[in-house]
Amino acid sequence: MASQAVTPQSEDFSAWYNEIVYKADLAAPSPVRGCIIIKPYGYELWEGIRGGLDRRFKETGHQNAYFPLFIPESYLKREAEHVEGFSPELAVVTHAGGKQLEEALVVRPTSETIIGEAFSEWIQSYRDLPLLINQWANVVRWELRTRPFLRTTEFLWQEGHTAHATEADAEAETIQMLNIYADFAINEAAIPVIRGRKSNIERFAGALRTYTIEAMMGDKKALQSGTSHNLGQNFAKAFNIQYLDEGNERQFCWTTSWGLSTRMIGAIVMAHGDDKGLRLPPRLAPYQVVIVPIFRKEEEKAGVMEAVARIKAELAGIRVHVDVREGQSPGFKFNDWEMRGVPIRLEIGPKDVQNNTVALARRDVLDKSGKQFVSQDGIATAVGDLLNDIHASMLRQATEFRDSNIHDVKSYDELRQVVEAGGWARAWWAASDADERRVKEETGATIRCFPFDQPQEKGVCVMTGAAAQEVALISKAY
RNA sequence: CGGGGUGUAGCGCAGCCUGGUAGCGCGCUCGCUUUGGGAGCGAGAGGCCCCGGAUUCAAAUUCCGGCACCCCGACCA
Image 1 (cartoon, chains in turn purple, green):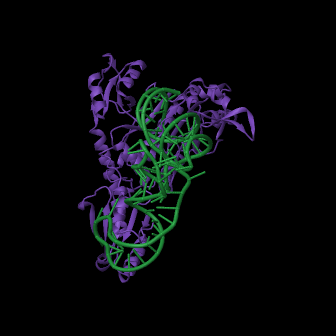
Image 2 (tube, rainbow, N blue to C red):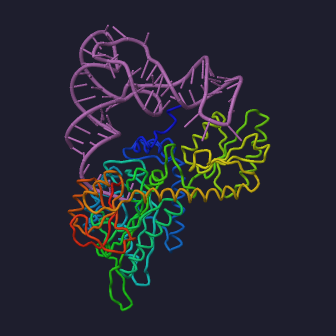
Image 3 (spheres, rainbow, N blue to C red):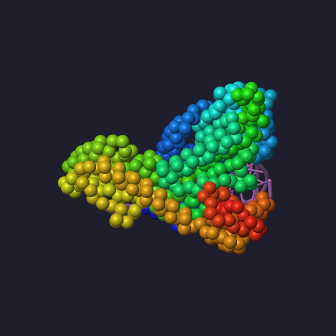
């Protein structure tokens, strides 16, 4: 049954990714170029991401709202850098209701402009600040090269938009939200991320500063997994977002925006997957436990299914799926659920019924040491502990992999070698935008970020030899 | 937009060169035997061969013209 297995990622990472997204039932191809259908299994993963983030947003005082999909074309043009950044990838509606529109409508690529316009009306006084809004939405960017989840023409995300009285408040918000993304990635997705600041070239169009969480994928390429922007007063000035301060003086607000998208699904797939398929982090996995009943004869079935029902009830609060398919053998189901990344497989057969046991097999350890027979008594505790252990073990594994593939480089030659070998180069950097472009042209790598965690000492720039204040992480990226 | 490639069953493909009954694997349906690591046998269902034109007694196959998609380069959460 070769066709049911996925191409091993060690053989061809790119083919592995493209196949697993479909074979694991996360997504289906769509009739529309560059778009995908997110299937229930993939969408439940997204719902887990949404739930984890939304809770954190609410805890920090944000409220959800929804703004229109269509944005008047003129809005985009009000912030010069913003329009320049986005105009090549806009989908524009010019006709509706059988007539040409007076003003074309842009399908939102992001909502800074239409939300900025609303904020300018909502904010009058310093008492209205801070204004902390988030929206869950779809956006459209007409990308030339697309890949499922990583870059699709239409994607789902959340975009937070906030307005503040002072630059310091806006900066604090920007950093706070980046920290929330990092906390979520680490503690729910089991993906170790590096927080840092983007270079000028990689900065969001219209932002003062852009911060990012960068994750290393299984092929050592980097993936920007969430971003947070301090927009300064750029949008406030373009959209006239002003307030009266305590001294009755008109002031421009300081705004921020921050987003995390369905790309995170791609991050989870590529950060944790192995040759056999997905390995889903336990706290986000749609099914945390899959139960595979095993029996030969009808008289065995009754006893087994009775135990299955009892154990499922004991596992209340844990996301459990019972695989009752009758056409497939247990062996097929083992492989199937391994490919789909379910953290724990729980087998119950006639012997277990007799011995009051079940077999627990963990997805992150595929050899025999990952499978154990445990008593049915106290099963909920055993499963709960195992889920936590799997999370910790996946996080540890990903962290070790990442750290062993980051290399300090002292020269441009070394940088090239590291990048070509697929790792991340850490280099002192004080060079120009032009130098950064040159690195990109010559090596295909970009500055992923200037990490928050910086060495104590100072160094010399890898490109120019000048004194450098900070190190940059440089690598190929998705 | 430049270069290369592909459109045939739900999916992956062969057939095309040299025109003549549309095939293979997987999946799907039914039956029997199976079931603790991808089961076996048997019987079935399923086609606008991308679209339009031309040549021909006859076109999946040859010719002309479209369209779509994929891969490689410049943009990107």
